[in-house]
Length: 485
Ligand code: ATP
Ligand code: MG
Ligand code: MG
Ligand code: MG
Image (cartoon, rainbow, N blue to C red; front, side, top):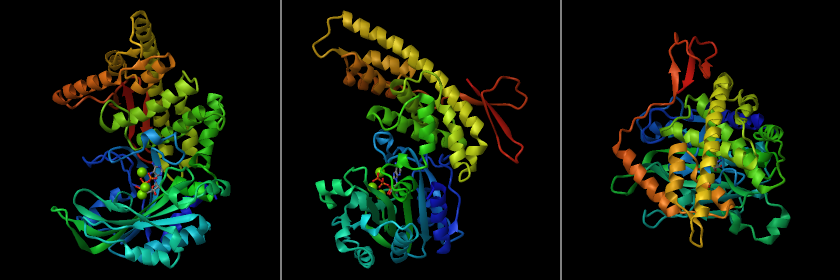
């Protein structure tokens, strides 16, 4: 089953259970000081759970564009290294606002997976909340009871507060969660270790796919829990992980969500996926990051030097650097993958199609300027290494963190790249010194003015100046042109 069909099937299933299909909220959040990017399906429904707004429908379903690169959920460093965490991913979800509760949420999740999608029940595990003494609540017997009717008891595991209790914040709506995990290890691998110990233990073929949250409490300011009069359901399933299971492959990157991109990356970088771990990581990083960056730009968040824009710039630079170091790409190339992406996902997310030109132009220009930085930085780094060689360095051959900081601060040269190159040359970076410099700079900028100008500026209509990117909304008059300053 193709990814696009899997997405539709999910939505149609919940529509058949009287849910209203709603669009994804933007991935970039403009009006919430506590959150830069949507990181879960429930974000856009927050006000319903808080009781500040009333939903039009008590049951909704959607696929939500999520980005987990900052704040509470930051998976960035895992991405590319493992095969199931992405920066940008889709979270499929169904919600009940004071309507159905645990019984239906559990029964429907099971029905969808095993009857509609025909997942073999024997590769599924579930977890329920074990309870918490401090909070004075016991094991989630209710959820346990419903699961027991459909899943053999040995595949219902207990989970702790960290994994199986969801809270919006220090106060407010919260409740126990029940997760569904899949175990798609080969028989051979299973024989090596018995099944249970592996759940939640970082094995790439034993992963969580769906989280069902039962919002049944309100945490008060004094920390105590009270039962909510209206209980809610909030679920989230990783779309790419679901595709991995349904397409019978071992990695999210082997699903058709990613294979067209990976094919293109291999062609353009003249590399082969699946031959060496180093190259594979670089290819996965690029395939993942181009999605995050293109979706962000399509949502109106251009790369910049501060806030959300800086997060996006850093993601793109991470991809450029992997291409530069491991795939030997010294010219812009990542922008070329936007076309494939928009072809693959443009029907489900029309903004990608509409903003294709803008995405390409912005990414290309960002690549250009960062590649120059990388070039200049490498020359400087060479000088630093030569100077270090001339000096009588201590036995551990440490290079000054101050120098590395200059590179980082003036040229935006990534510190992990500096460390990597130093290592290759038999030197080490003095990380403590670097951290000290970084802290000093943070203190400086905290006291300095906070607002910095964006470096992608929107041009006025009568502006004759050259522009790099423009976006136009189909059927609407507005055309926006941008200039990089
Ligand atoms: P994990 O334990 O694997 O990091 P999580 O518990 O942090 O997942 P939830 O917050 O429960 O994830 O989100 C709901 C679902 O979204 C998960 O069950 C998973 O399928 C998916 N998911 C979470 N993080 C990612 C990610 N970085 N990339 C892809 N899918 C993800
Ligand atoms: Mg996580
Ligand atoms: Mg988890
Ligand atoms: Mg979870």
